[in-house]
Length: 113
Image (cartoon, rainbow, N blue to C red; front, top):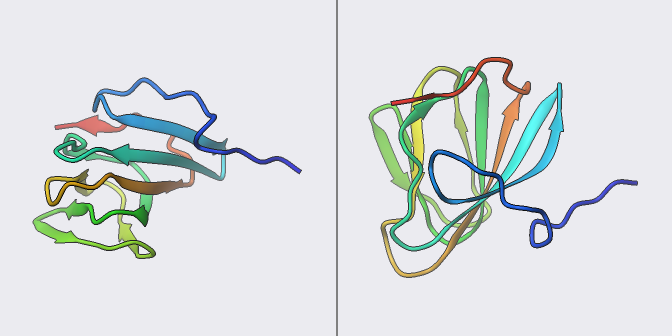
């Protein structure tokens, strides 16, 4: 059995300059844990594979194409491949934690916009 705790995994360097921890990385999928403090956000980008976000804590805003909506914990949000998307935590003063799954694992790089 293999297990990982996001609290003990090392932070992964990223262009967004936020707390990202890789929890799973296989050819079939990639799972990242993102923590956004109040006022933090990812930069708009396109991912070459389908992505889904699962809100673990807080109420982040999910931006996909021209839609933006704030979601509460225990919500899953889908984002299709090659669509501009990003996450932000501009509302309120609590930390947001989001599990991000890319399936399959991307073989091309994400494009920052």
